[in-house]
Length: 52
Image 1: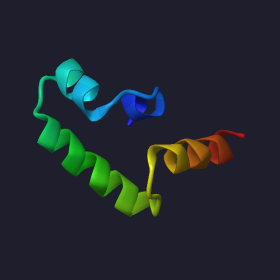
Image 2 (image 1 turned 120 degrees about the horizontal axis):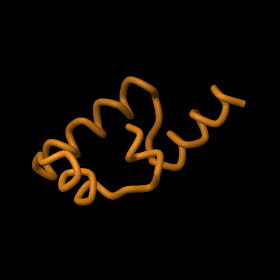
Image 3 (image 1 turned 120 degrees about the vertical axis):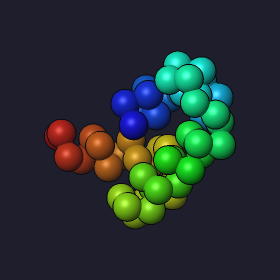
Image 4 (image 1 turned 180 degrees about the vertical axis):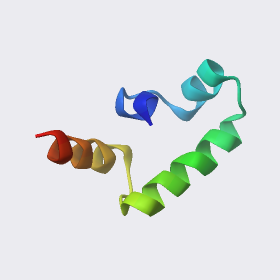
């Protein structure tokens, strides 16, 4: 999630942690579902609300 919050794409994250893009997309989908967000920008906004 840290890489997502830094604006990395699924492809970039996959390369950084040596997993497939499909696996990153599955993790991203699960994170979004659990946090009730629908986009990377909503995730970032939620993060800012928590720390701010």
